[in-house]
View (cartoon, rainbow, N blue to C red):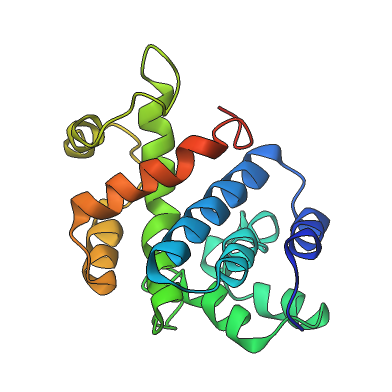
Length: 188
């Protein structure tokens, strides 16, 4: 079954109660929609994948190696299409999944899952606490500071940009652009 946005959000909320997790899902959704539009792809499909990518997060926080392994059962139980399930599982490639991202949608998700966290955090430490005045150079400066957003795996972002066939700077700039219009919805 192809879920619409409202159905996907309802399913996400069934398994995730923490607002920070919902905000992250909304950030990834918005960024996925942006990249789908740039690529001339299905924005609704990419957005749903972004919403659902961490559906099993709260069930696997104590056992992070199980992240992306519980999600397929949750999604199949809801009747979700296999291409969405494959995309969700592939975003954990090399960390908690051996399913390699193989489509443009999957490679984008793999990359921007980590990157949205870095960009949002870079915006939050600005005097404006906003993305409105965040620029690429500010994110790149924070990128070099390994103590900043320590949990963000920069190597995954770099590898993902290569898999996407886009320069890293372009991926960062487009992620900033994607997040600006939704910053209120993602808790900024």
